[in-house]
Image (cartoon, rainbow, N blue to C red; front, top):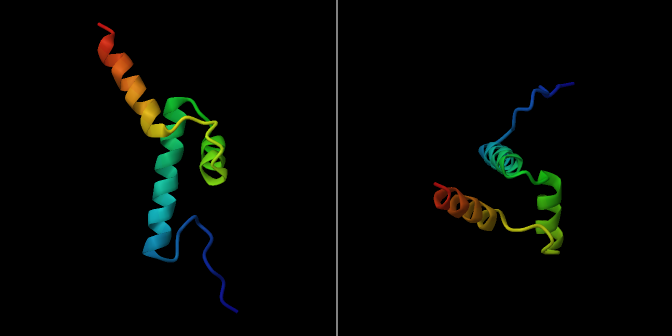
Length: 68
């Protein structure tokens, strides 16, 4: 019987890319102060209750550049 190593590693390059993408998304959500799970669920179900991340990033950048 073979045992697969359980260490958070992936079995393919696609798996690594997906893991890295979700990690980046989670970090962005944390920086913006929104729930990763709420954002992800809203994108899947397409409710439109959570603002889009690019819009939030743009708003924060504009607010930061407007403040002296």
